[in-house]
Image (cartoon, rainbow, N blue to C red; front, side, top):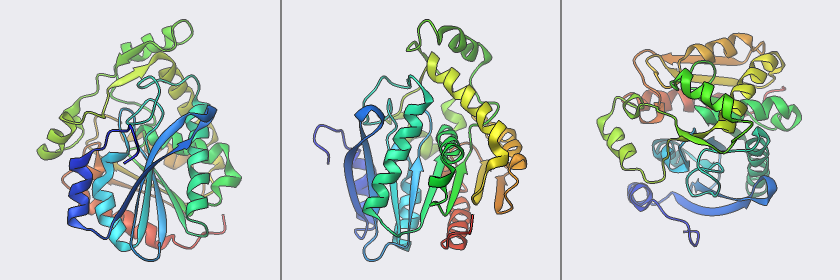
Length: 305
């Protein structure tokens, strides 16, 4: 445990009971502006086959991916995940940024840290929902650094229409310049996360989760999505997009548009017809994780991108 940082005991003691071979670590690193951000890692015993880095979504945190950890770490994958600024155990006003550069540079610093801890190991980058936008922006902004990645994976990428009302988005746009830190409840429907009632019960009791988004975050997010679409043709590394066909939080069409704009041939998009937003916690999560593992195994050797 990192001193002074709350620990989600129920979640990770559960994993450690199931598989004591998983080595769980917590620490902090310096993000943009030297902000001390929380991260955690789960390492297998023995040699690490590859590293999967997870960037969570809006209001989420790094504890949300226990099924991925339980599934992949025993297969010699190391998992790293951070709490974004304004999220989870990391500092900052909940759901607020001054500029998208903060997210981008935080991710850059995190990846550099991982490379020092796991040198010469294949590296995969996964973004979930809002985190997908951070990941896609990073890859397109830093194409040379992105070439060190074996692949990018997005779960329910938050591109295009999202389940936030037009009124809230308009209000964010109006307030961004005069009161950028003004935060609103995003109004996202908790029950749209998963068809699994047990998963929804866990979400409802999750004290690290929040539902806030600031005016500036809204305008920065919308501008970044537009920029990503405009530069999709520059994409140069393997891409996997996984989405629930019944996702009401982030409609699948946005990811489909981006997928069609990417000209790079090594790409795959899988839509699970009845699945909801939190694919890693939905009723068909084992199917999703099997597809993810299959993709990772096929891309352990870096393509000549």
